[in-house]
Figure (cartoon, rainbow, N blue to C red):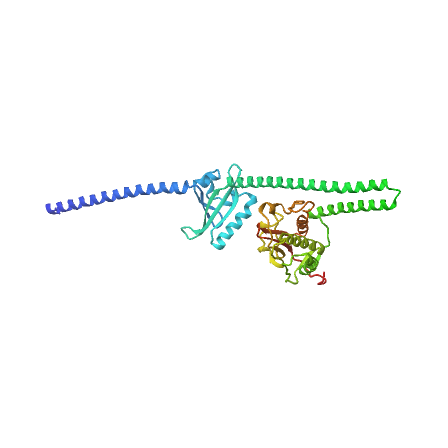
Length: 415
């Protein structure tokens, strides 16, 4: 059937309109393709060339996707990562860290971080920080999204810092030992001078028994002082041998304070309210610790008005600030501890004095003193305890002694 000229013109017009629409659609498609290519380029830069490595791992730990940075960090190709278990690239000694990290991630759905060593393709180990979140893939299966960052330089810097701190500590220890050796040598020299001088006198006066007896007595007295110094140094080193038995700390403190009271400032408050707090200790050595601390606190008060307070309390191990403890590196054991506190509102100490107060023969007092706090530290170390000191010039001082509680009760209440 032949079309009329009018129908033909109309059909031709419609075809032209469709052609124009198709051209417009093609232009839109070309523009969309350009935008898609640009988006892919942005994705490549943002994902593949990110400053950190990106991984997607299944719940079982298989790597499903990785960016180029992750491959470069491990010195391999992206294809060599995909399909492999992430644990394959973790140093054997750090496998437990990764296992716990992944277990906590899927158990809690909370973001997790850990630091461990990954093994590169050349066999070298590098420190990495792993940060992971739990997610789901397009099929609803659980996966974890992981970022990995190289922290090798930071770890090296930390190790170098620790090494330098050890060197500084060693220098301080050497300085302390040199001071201690000099003081001991001087003290022993004085004692030996007394011993030898009196023995020479005894030899010269052998015909007079009374003068001989006097000289020998003085020589013996100096010899006993030398022996006492030797025992004091062993105590400082924490090598003192004492009778360890369950004792009630409050009772030991009361007995000690009763003997010290007559010589203390009238402002001293001797409060030991807690009963039944038992530690495994040498009661005589605990008395020595308290006597030294109370005597120092009393001297710090001097003639000024102020308070001296002694208290006994119990404290859980988790509440003890280990970073502030002396000796350095001391860690509390599980359970409760006894805390013996001696506080004063006296002259206090500055940072320099606080760093040295437990060193043998260091003292701000007159010549011949300075073993008191060194012996306190030795006794506390021998009892597996620690000391915390807080003080500022003009604001007094607080000494806290932490001792582990005994597992059994004392045979009697009196000490």
